[in-house]
Length: 185
Image (tube, rainbow, N blue to C red; front, side, top):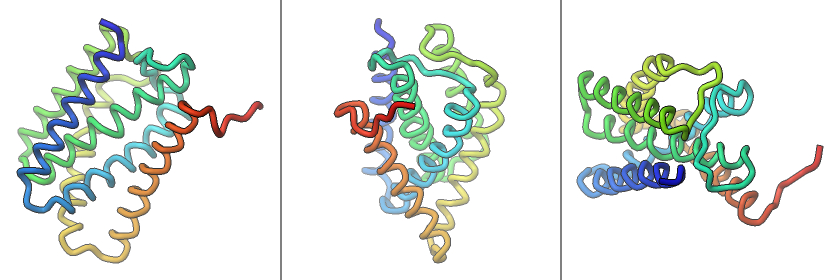
């Protein structure tokens, strides 16, 4: 199987889970706001880990330029899979056991991606993922509750992170598809 197949599978599963959650959940607006809050935070964290400190590389092998290809893999992980899981956990108030099981599932995916050479660690380690994902999931639960009666700060942060996800993802697509925003250094 080509590398991108597994990224499409992960994207497809994440989208199906998110759509089913939206259909079944009563407070759709809060669910989507939580999704974009976590996605925006994940983009910020991944900016430092992936781009600044080069902690790992994704290898979907869908785009010729390695940097863009790795960023596409990051969007699947940080912009889709993790925020979906965090939003589902928050929306349905899943307990600690489900958080740990979900974390272990992501650890399994990470290890499979490493084994199939879809993803490489540099200084990043799987145990770091194991420590940070529960924090992410509890943060999603916390923010989900804050969105019940949001203060001005909560609304501002949520809106800012939502817009940053839209603009960063759109800008990435414009760069990849139309070769815009490319500069020689």
